[in-house]
Length: 69
Image 1 (cartoon, rainbow, N blue to C red):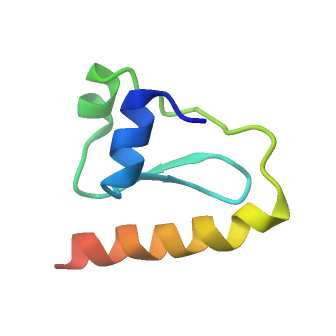
Image 2 (image 1 turned 90 degrees about the horizontal axis):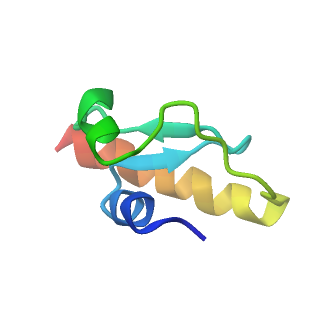
């Protein structure tokens, strides 16, 4: 489970996570702004399983498409 700040940004496709669990951000937001929300650049999700990878890949694609608009 994600904390409320992480969850809200994830739901808005402003952050995502790599298959290794490393946080990724959209080009629409800066790390300085994320830091104000206590979103840390070096965050790594633990306990990801292979079944999560396809979902995260789809989420990253949607994040990329949002910035292209």
